[in-house]
Amino acid sequence: MSGSARTFEGMPVDDGGPVFREPWEAQAFALAVELQEQGVFTRREWAEQLGRAIAEAQARGDPDRGDTYYRHWLAALEALVTAKGLATDRLLDQYRERVREEYRRLHEHDHDHDSGCEHDDGHDRP
Image (cartoon, rainbow, N blue to C red; front, top):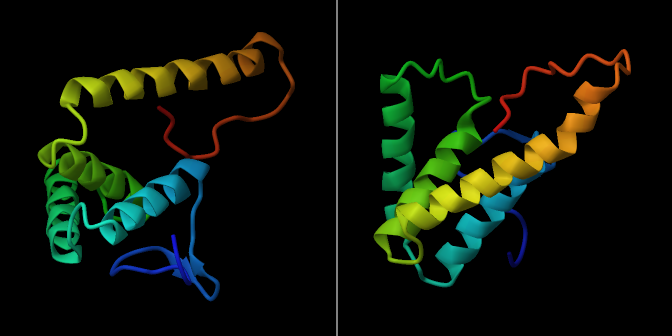
């Protein structure tokens, strides 16, 4: 990403710019901006697809509290890279499964030993 961080309507921000709760949110943000800068899709295409992703989530009951914003961002990004022929649904499904497997692998230790730590931090996990 070149220059200062860009923000978009509805994006969680503070005085320092975009706010990310998880590393994947920042990665999805950076990838979408980079693909836009490379001309893979226009800002208008992005805005329309993100709007559709948010509307679809709300229709499924998303309470729209802001904590799922980057899930909509990721859904829009996946839809655009599929529409542009950069990835197939099958390839995206394979990546999703690899992410889930890695998450389980990284967190199985947490469940094998009672550390006394509470792991329910309110974040959805893959």
